[in-house]
Image (cartoon, rainbow, N blue to C red):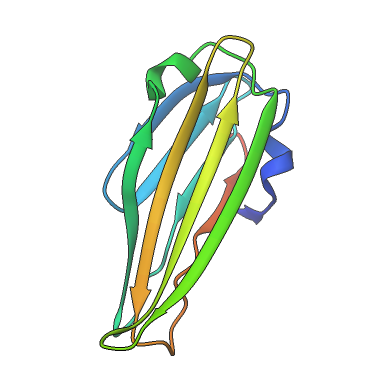
Length: 120
């Protein structure tokens, strides 16, 4: 398991993509996997809040563009929030995966990305 950046996904072909409320895993043709997730702690909640576009349209396609857009704010009643939107582009489609993190203002609301090397 290695830390990585979104750019590490560029020009790789997606062979599978799976999502739950709290993680998204891309498997690439050459066998590596990219996992978007958040390790939950006290007084915070981070998870997938929406998907715009057809996630399965990425399967079999090469990632030609990736972007991350982060917006933060404060809610005086309950703490703070962070909205993170990841955009994945191929020649034929674009998919946006939105995450929402909330906390009492003292905890991380961000999304982590790890790369798992191909297993033999």
